Length: 237
Image (tube, rainbow, N blue to C red; front, side, top):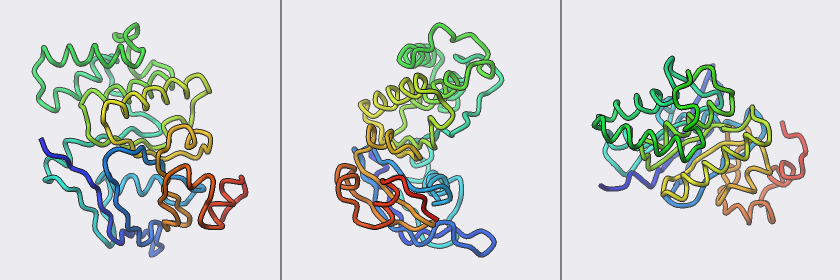
C-alpha cells in the first residue's frame, strides 16, 4: 500500500465575502514529524486544516496528495474541537466507522476492543456516547479515528474545552497514535501544548504563512517579529 504523503499546497487561497481568510499559502508536509499549526485567533488555523482535509475547496491554488483520490479520502481522518457523537454506544460509534470501511464483523469487534482499551474507555464501552463527559467524548473521537488506521490525522484544537487531567489523557493518546506511524497535523492556541507535542510549527497570521520550521528553532529563534510577539504572549491583530 503506497503512501498518500507528502501533502503539497501551492498558493492556496480561500476567500469569503471578497476577503482572503487564507492567503497564498505554499508548503509541503512530509510523513513523520508532528505538525502543529499556531497563530492568534482569526489567523486561519482551523480553516487551513479543513482545506487540507478536503472539507472546503480553495478559492485559488492547489492542494495535492501523492496518492489516488480514493486513497486520499480513505486514509485520512479528522477530529474536531467539539466531537460529533452518533446516537449509539461508545463501542458502536467505533464499529460504525469500521463498517464504513467494509471491515468484517470479527475484525471490527477486535479492533474496537483494542482502541477502547488503548484510550482508557473499555469500562464505558456500552454507555451512550452522547452522555459521556466532554473529555470522554474527545477520547472516543480519537479512538474512532485511530481505529481506521489513518495515515494522516487532522486535529482541530482537540483539548480546547478540557481540564488539565483530560488534556493530559488526550495528549497521551495523540502521542500513542503518532508512535503508531500516523502523521499528526493539529491546531492549538496553547503554547505549552505546542512545546510538548510539536516537532515542527506552522505559524499563521492574518491568513498568511509566516514560518514553517522545526519546533525547537521556532521557539528559541523566531524568524519574524510576529512570531516573537506571539511566543511572548503579546496580542496580535
